[in-house]
Length: 348
Image (tube, rainbow, N blue to C red; front, side):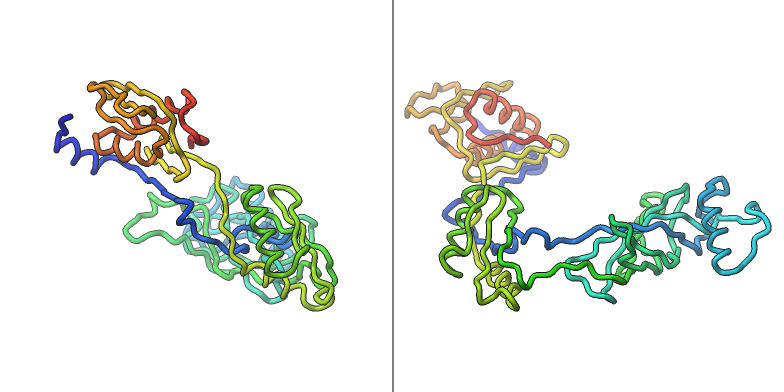
């Protein structure tokens, strides 16, 4: 086998490849709080309709009727009479939708970040100021008030033409006006919900919690949830402390063997548990043989690997031969179709 140095240099520069080797022996433990959360303790979404003013002629056009009507309503609330709606020009004003997430256990007066998005045909929200806007939950109640100067966060060296100017952020742009009630104390049972359902991970969590807190503290409901029993001494005042004790426990999560391919960028992400069985591949001028019998490869093979080789070894070998990302993706898809790739193949 003869290798072309130029080809190798080109492959190093042009091949966009990311291989993640998560060897089981070297797997890192993660805190339970990074793998799961208590059911019911979550953020809630808030929305509101408002007006952005102070734009430099980049607001909605006069034919956006709801912006003009909103201006009339605003003037009426301020006891400023408007003879005719046509008297209002809105080129410095834009109608917007405001979205925010109110975190669990947020208290009155706490601050939230908000996102402001144009609803009309405004060219840009740059330099605008959001007027006071109530933010409502799905139940129609007001949980926050938003107001502030907009920030578009345009990167240095990037002009307005190359930026998206119809969406802006206001850091700490809203304050909590009403708390979302969630009572912990007095609860005897909780549900711990896994972010990535997996029976093995769930069992490891239950075993870890029972060993640290006490036998019977946790039991598996299914692959996505554990049932937690709060110790009797913590029912009244220390349920939060019980949750904190559980969150800091460490567990080694289990993962399924998977290969993720992004065909647009040529990026390939591979788990370490992925293996390939005996298979022979011919792709263009390239021939690859993977066989469990030593010496079974022919001299025409450009590359040979022993059976049960990891997919990482295959990819490294193909990369060294200068195989392009598109060809590599085709080879992996073919190996999967032949039933020799012992992993889930996910294409983005």
